[in-house]
Length: 622
Ligand code: ATP
Image (cartoon, rainbow, N blue to C red; front, side):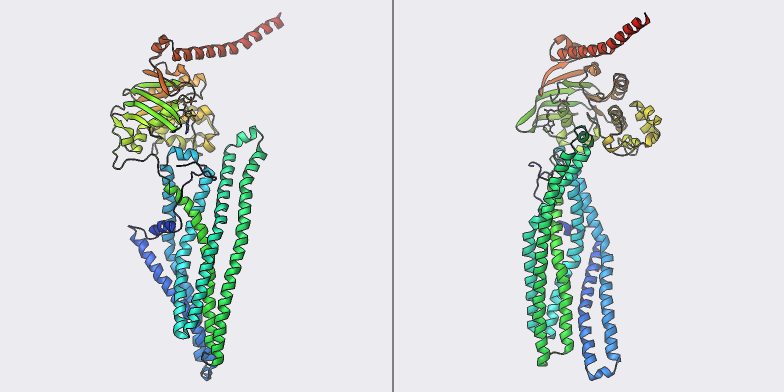
């Protein structure tokens, strides 16, 4: 996959035009949904009935006009009956159309729902790489516009374009059989010119619609990004800068929208002219017929009524075509998302991970996010079942990368990662992820209640279980002290909680998940020393008997680990237990010393002002 496009969505070529319609067709004639298919059939029958009835309307009108003009008009009953029949035919034509809509609505809505669900499901199936590149605001606009486009397309292709084409053929046939072949030829030629003109012109205009959409998506992505970074914007007083960035997209949208609207006016004028020319030609022919005595006045008005009746939907057709092109453009982008391949996919027929003791093996693993920049080199280690291994190293050494690989957010470039002897690429991702509980470096919460966020670890857990997990994570007391208790909301991404509180919620939900393997990525980094020690105890309690990988900065938290792996620029530099590594007097010992010195210095800083105060106090006392 290439880099993101201007709208922040990784560039993909979605299906164009017919491809989109085919996907839609599959949903409108759904497999295994007999009831919906029956509805489609009934709607189609009603469609034909409505159109045939509609075609009768001008014929009844003609008969009424002729009946009024003949001596038989003395028998008033005939024209009256015809006029009533004319009215009835109009009402029926409309009623059939409405019933058809009502019968078809569930089919259309189901198609929209299924497609939206498919896109949503697919987005979740895409890799972390895709999601790191995308811009939330951009994607949400693409889905929103795509769904609207779908709704429009379904309504218009099924009930406007197809029926109108059917009606055109029907009216052409009637004009031919009732009057003169020349009438139907002129009518059909005008319709043909109209359609060709509309298509060619609309195709030319489509680029304005595309750039309108791109600008809209871009502006929206910027707006959402800016709002998500609300605090940062304030820290730097950069509101005008943000407004300018947003305005770039809006200005592009403005330009494209103006061009789009101007070209639309041209299109409308062109279409109107074509229809007027056709109408005048046919009416002139009919007028001649009346003068020559080959046609009645009734025929004259009927021809007019036919043409008006035909050109009205034709005008709609022009509108529908334009809108359908817009809808297709919108949907292309959404279906483009469906075409993004999932980078990490299950092998066909992959079995679920069979967890026994949960032994983890990294076997000569190489990894890079981008080929030009290798991150891990020949990393090998083993975590015996139920044991704890800590990974330490300087910032950027690749520690979190190891956890992402174990969780299979990315696949290794070389080597193997095995759990209980099974290469994690050969098993179902869902089973792998079910076996691993992660407390990430930066916890992000759902904008919901604390209860919801903890229970997320295992939907369906009982209240007691949720509270027990909160107790183990040392957050229960904090929660019950809140005015709303467990029902307190945490704000977007959990921002209403402190870093330490968020981390404890994350620990609680992982405890609730109860996995065989635990992965703590600096799980206690946001906590003060006292809470850290408390949580450390509960983490040790939770990880007893579970295979655990701890990624840590503060070495004091991992001195009891069964093995410590020291990473240096993506390579394993040292390994061993805390005591052994200190004795080795290498990188680890160096890191340990520096951290101890820093801690001692911090303590001194806390004590010194206190001693100054004490001295001062003494002097005052003297
Ligand atoms: P820290 O202690 O600061 O969290 P770390 O050891 O956990 O660091 P990693 O997050 O594993 O470091 O990152 C290792 C390297 O990979 C870093 O240099 C980082 O810039 C790079 N990196 C991380 N994620 C990506 C990504 N998605 N795309 C490209 N490079 C990445």
